[in-house]
Length: 278
Image (cartoon, rainbow, N blue to C red; front, side, top):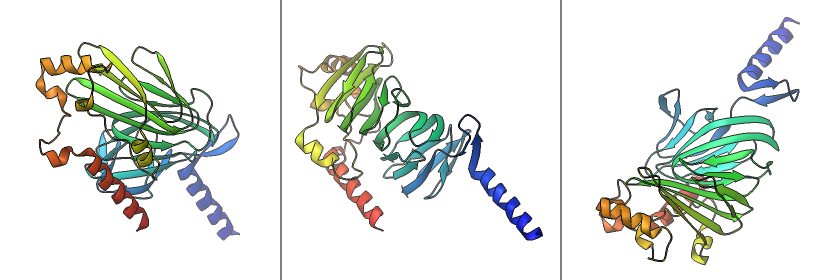
């Protein structure tokens, strides 16, 4: 009898570590938001201002920030079965998360920088799942999505794209932009003047072929490809006139080989496939 009592106490102790009781639903729900499934290279978790390296199996909680270093890859499984893959030099903060079950949850993911791919397997109610960058938000119901965010001099550049499902992206003026399958929108804001512009287009066949590969990431936008007819051209041209370095990403090498983003993306995807096989 004493052994049974000790076993019960131990079981309740383990339960208390991993779960909490939700009075509203009357169910036990996990305390953590996500668990690391792939961590290659240097992957970190920032909690209460303290950063530590993490590995496969480690858990992430509300207010944590997941950080990948250069040449790093991280993939997490969220408790609602959503899968998110972060590319190199990326940061994702778990700003808000309330979980009842896999179809009833509310989440706000604050995407600070880098590249992310998300697969939301279980549909959510409108407004229940949101990914936000510094000035734009994507409301998600159920879809396979891509989000990139980078700073090019004083220009904040957010990209959103889909290969399945539908979402609504709100820009810095709170104007909604509905995206359907194969749509992409690029939104740029000058952090100094607050001027902004956006451009919506369709992913090319070459891009779709790449993105349809498992866990591949969307190429980062490069202003050097802009045509004068682009709605983004004037904003970038003005920034370059003020500061010639605005045409290049912060920290971008002048080495032409390192500017070959297609080659870099291919190598990154090959690495991820090799990591998953091992």
